[in-house]
Length: 127
Image 1 (cartoon, helix red, strand yellow):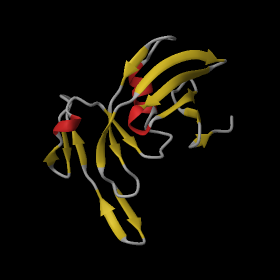
Image 2 (tube, helix red, strand yellow; image 1 turned 90 degrees about the vertical axis):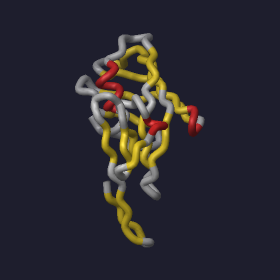
Image 3 (tube, one colour; image 1 turned 60 degrees about the vertical axis):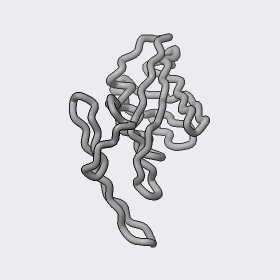
């Protein structure tokens, strides 16, 4: 992952194996051990990874911690996330999403392919 700003360019390399062992720039990231997902700050796309993988039934809840990449400096942190499948809205699936790290909660809406329709404050797709 590479980024460029007025102060120059930065990059970070994330690697994970099927056992949940993570490397950040080649160094073992023990605090990410066992994680299956990556979350890019301010991205409407990366939450679809656990939504699709978890395949929750309405009313089910699951924790899905992720390797969180900050947009400003590409640092990688542990991010605790929880998804609870809410009642569908027509053909769209809804998930109550919580992130205690940033005291953030919202309801995410996805189409039947698990592509984002609405991520409050970040993205709304015209249907």
